Picture 1 (tube, rainbow, N blue to C red):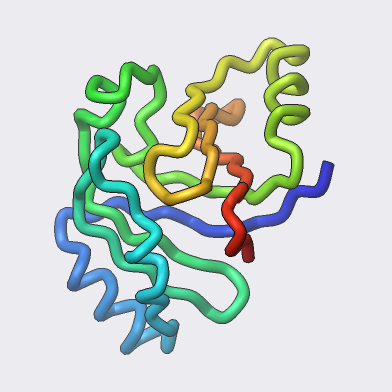
Picture 2: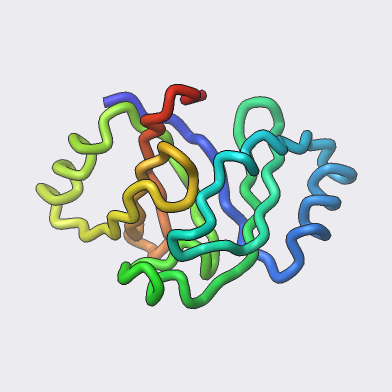
Length: 139
């Protein structure tokens, strides 16, 4: 299994201000092409901005305390944010988590076209995403 850091998600009540800050203070670049890949009818239609340093992305998402309830998942990745890793074999990774007794929420492809996502907690309670991009445009 190959895994790499993909993005960090920050939750905000003011996504435009966060995006402006990241672009003008940190000199990150906007990545508007990701807006077209969003799925907004599967439990989350909040505002999201995407910025990058050219390697790692920041996803700036509108905080939503109800996503877990709407999607029937125990873990809400849009309450406090999360760190995300891209994986080349998500099914094998799910087996690893199961073998280690680590519960996870399997969101499937719900927020981004082709991205199958799972979320779980690390030992300190931080939310971790692992996803596999099964679309033809995987980057």
